[in-house]
Length: 170
Ligand SMILES: Cc1cc2nc3c(=O)[nH]c(=O)nc-3n(C[C@H](O)[C@H](O)[C@H](O)COP(=O)(O)O)c2cc1C
View 1 (tube, helix red, strand yellow):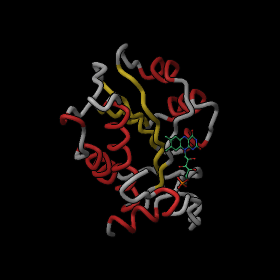
View 2: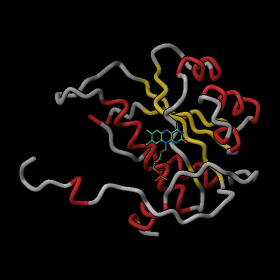
View 3: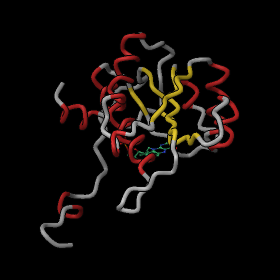
View 4: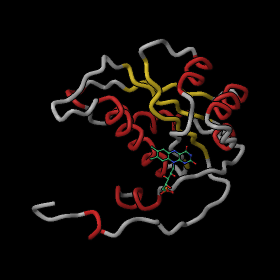
């Protein structure tokens, strides 16, 4: 599958089969995150891979009760070890770097027929408590991953090219 196919095929999956992910596939998908670029190559990302059903259920609860999160066989909890580094552009590097790695992961998942969903609606302190994540480490996003229960080809609801691309000047 080429990169464009993966980008077009990826869409949020919120229904998962009760089927585990082969270890080799899971580690290959995580490897895609490891190869991501990051500011100054800081690689702040750390991924907590949660398979335990009871822990997944607790995480789903901490994610505003979005139960489908806990129904995936694996939840990747994307964290950052950060010293608060801010780039000259004024943006902190860690959320950007972790998001790039997670995007690599979500696209690599498509290659194996795995579905993912970005989850930003969660209470960080609750997730940290459930997983014993130390102070100073941030939880940036959650990503349930598994085989989709329903194969749908959804039309992408996106702004048009002309609405988002400006040539030469704003
Ligand atoms: C940073 C981020 C946070 C998101 N948080 C949630 C979430 O908490 N729950 C959810 O169901 N979807 C969440 N989404 C998924 C978006 O709703 C979805 O990506 C968007 O509607 C586009 O649809 P698509 O992913 O199918 O292309 C999130 C997406 C991103 C990028």
